[in-house]
Length: 143
Image 1 (cartoon, rainbow, N blue to C red):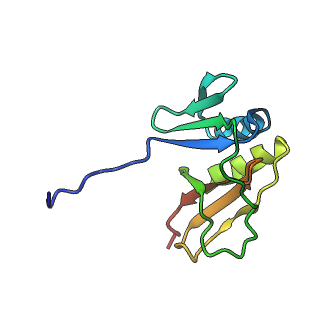
Image 2: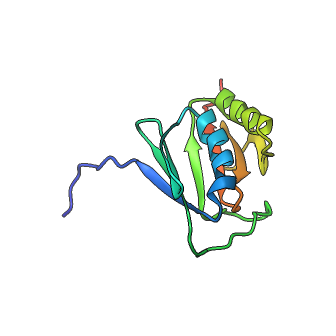
């Protein structure tokens, strides 16, 4: 079915499998709570967060399916990562500060990445299972 009309597609939710919900809960509470997402479900099997437009579901595995190594920084692309777009560079710095306050060090500290595009600022973290979560802003440079 070909059409000139373009379908608008956005990500509505993502699911993340973890080995220990207890250790991951603190990480995701700090990160997603710091980004303004609220908990909408919290059980012994999983926790769900939303901001009404986007949801993240974190669930504990009964039996591990994947074991991830932390990225080294030498990868061209870090596969299996979640990148969350925020409104501006300040929000990127704010979440880095919030995570540090909660005991989580950035995997890749907040900085500009002009190799992606001018004005691309990002900070990345590894969750307890080495799943990478990036928070970024795309600000066009002032002229």
